[in-house]
Amino acid sequence: MKGVVLVVAMLAVALIGGCGTVLANPPLVPPVQYEQFCEAQKVSGTGVIDVSTSIVDKKIALEYYNTMAGDGDLELDSEHAYSQDPEKLKRAVASVNNGNKSGLNLFEATKMTYAGATPLTGGKYLNSKAFYGGIGANVQEMFSVNEMEKDETSFFASTTPYETNQTLVAAPEDMNAALKLAGRNTTAVEELMTAANGMYIPSHLIGIETKNSFNGTWGTDATWHKIFYKDIKAHEMFTGTFEAEKTIKFHENPVPERVNVPCEGIDC
Image (cartoon, rainbow, N blue to C red; front, side):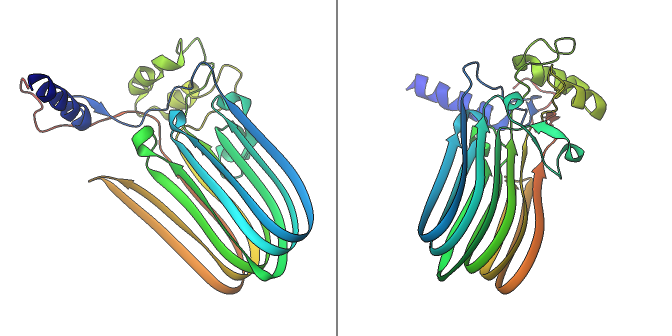
């Protein structure tokens, strides 16, 4: 019984951060035996469509689902690229790093046209899962359309550089302490988050960029929630014939934030 009480007490301290501890979402350390997944396809034709991709990785706090189904005329040019080592996945995204190439953990690009009497129905869900060390932000897209022309990009990052700048920090495992010392010095933080090969890693980033025209229903939901601290929600849904150009992006500076707890200054 005493053992159970001790475990519960230790868990409670871990959850509240302990007295005088730093609470934050520091960038996650990519595993030594990193993993990758790549898929690229070009499809053109008429008939039944059933497409589904899901990527879930607890080590980098990633949840990603993308599905669509319909019956009609389709032209599709798409790419999925996922890497636990962000230096192996270099992509340029207009709203990230001034449009220069960055190291990402997930990149998805889709160019598509569809027309059919049967609606093309689908959706996309991208989540930086807080329980696994992410920032608790997610972006979701839903649609049911008889006609659509779409050019869309999704992106996600959550890790440190795989190979750090050795003159600044010896290893990814030491990054959290170095970022804590950097504090409000944004130049120092950017230097730390730049890999040995010069590639910038925008840790704790999630978003989509889309341009589309459609006849039907299309919409997005975006949320960012931290218990007792933050609650951001953005919802849009359109039914009819529309053209839309939209960017949704959540980004958190990967520097630990010191939180003053009630027992500060006493022996607890």
